Image 1 (spheres, helix red, strand yellow):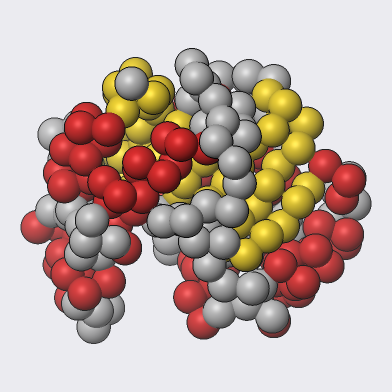
Image 2: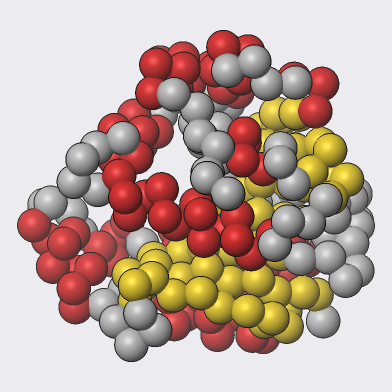
Length: 218
């Protein structure tokens, strides 16, 4: 099934009121040179849901809201949480796309202090967030708190390899500063806190650029 993404014109409403990072990411999703990769990582995450029909799903780091339409195919209610208060633009984007806004809740929140009670969600999705923290274990413990027992936690994160370091260097970026946690650090933390059920690698496990993980609470 094809990935459901908003149009670039609709996403303009999100990035107009979003962060500089949102602006650059949206450009990459629709670029001819990197769009295939950025869209594929969302497809990897969607595949880990395996057609599940959930009641309440939390997306941490919702950003521009680019993944919300796809997540609505899997849940009755999608809660999009981000540390930045960018949800007014996301709301405009969803309205333009004709989404059923009664099934979407947007909220500002911190991954280390998620503003919901224990066992609030049937699934948690976290795309390209954990690599930004030097201590991903603390975030994982908080995620585990808000998910219901036997419900999936889906995480996606870039691999830190010689190839990806060279890519960052070619763009004039410091990979360590932007992504203090490597994929190995994140995987160790996941194994300490959760039980890994499935791992997907792109393009190959031997030379990954991106990793998607489905895990459950211990």
